[in-house]
Length: 503
Image 1 (cartoon, one colour):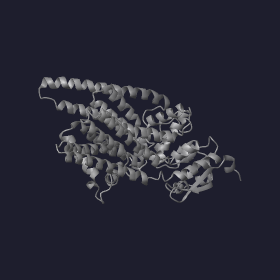
Image 2: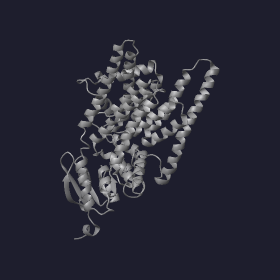
Image 3: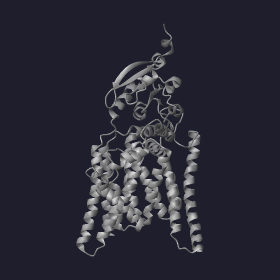
Image 4: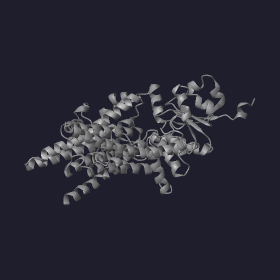
């Protein structure tokens, strides 16, 4: 009992690290996170699932986070800013992920002490590189993924299926977890005795288990389909098609970024040789342990294969946050590697070896925590935050509440201006997407005729817009503001019909 109290006290104390990370990250979130939070803000205000104006659109990859933050905002009567709620909600999810590993330590084949080590590895290893992911869906996804697979291994099949349903509404690739459960059950069947009658009985039992998980998943799906069809007319976010279109237009792909960039920054540096990092060495040891003696941990290898394979086949653009689910799953294999060393040394009869095991576990956790802490300290928020807030503030004073603003990065602009936005990339304005895919970048301005257009040096469309001369007749430049990273944001206003026709 005393040891249990000690373990829980240590876990409670370790939860202060994610809290410190949240405070260190601040609230200059990534622009894409503010797309989701704009939906949440409108939900909290009772305006529905809209991006500041009707009709409702599903322009966020993570409808569950938008609904959860919106509901929390409404419950608190909008007394707390929505982005603040999102940061602390996802911080709580990070902490819950660590506690889930500890609470289900038996199904993962861990002792109390080993479960504590693994849970601490989850709590200390949440960041990869100088990325700010709190406030986005990354840790909510991680928590629900750990919970779903833990429930599966514990034999709570219906609950596991329901959790996979929630996971899929957090990010669509969560559906891969249902496949992981299926592969896990097949693996359990193949490991049974070779007696045919016994295998048939075992197969029938495992098939019933998968049926219960599929039922739980199906219940969530049916509820979502009913809501989504009534609200949007479809069930899938348009973000997948947008990211595929961006990759087709030449943006770096998921495969390119994974192979050439992301993995090199995971787990801390090793003097220019990433694979010699203690983090990667322990990931490899954890994988070897899973293959040799703790087969239930192979679900993480199956998950990694399904996740990477799915994104490679889909051919999406390589946005940096797509690496986070990979890193967090590998962090669990790192935890298993650390546990393996800890248990091997601690099981020795010599007191010195037990102390060495504790020392190695402590040093491994500190290595992981130091890598995360350095990333938090290095992160300065979204580099566009200051200029995009200023842009939104300009429109709050200069544009009418019903004026539409055309721009290609709509998160900060939509969240802080409160004005209708025409998304030139098609995420929140889905009718733009097929024209974006054909490189018809002028279509949104020509056919939708927004009252304002913002030209940015990061995606300069002005030469294409001015090619046939129509743009300079329809729009005039009225203001210039600083652009992120230097240069100018040029603000154009649509010329009124009577002005355009005047002699």
